[in-house]
Image (spheres, rainbow, N blue to C red):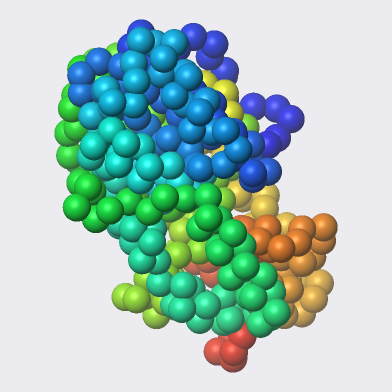
Length: 330
């Protein structure tokens, strides 16, 4: 989190929506769970099965006069464990439907292609011993999640309308932080449930994801993310309820700040490439983030790769053909 928010913060919560911060073991801190209390009762991002998270969730429901049995559906904005880990548990307990963006299905059902991801990170220069650390991390996280049964899933597409909490929400599926990330927008009240796509105090990580149709075998996550931002400016929400951190408004100011951040980070990475002569994404991440370790290295490499894509598109560097990939300034 940055010390200064990138947008104007908002204190109030809209009527009919319950805010439930739930603990996670990750540096990002609590995940923001929201419950749309009117029929159909809908839970957004129920956190993960860690510490007393599920007990906290049930207690919060009780304060609003609801119980797990009242939950009709669970929306997962994206398939990262801090957001979906408890979705399978909640759906089973409530006999509820789970909704997510279509591309997130393999993550929620536990069918993510880790072998394909291993090939991607190998091309980026991440050593084999570091990759084994990642596998240990995934195994540990699996213990904190409850996979969603495929028959319970309803898959959402961009442009769908979802009835939830007595309102009709527009579904906005925008790749970037996650390939099938789904945000919900209520045009009547101009409330946006943004998941991790828009956050007030942090720029979402452009997480590496496989794409079998791409020559690189991966998505260009940051390029996709930046391309989505104008859509949310046009929506002009009065209130944004994010997946982490405080509520906020003024999306144009937020997106301007984020674009400036990414421009500056790209310049910084180009400077490192020029100093080193050429480098792999893994080597660049070590220069940029010298104090990170374990799975945070994967996030650091994701950050670097996203900006290398921007620099390559701008013609400011060139990528070699060797394995692992190396980049040099033009």
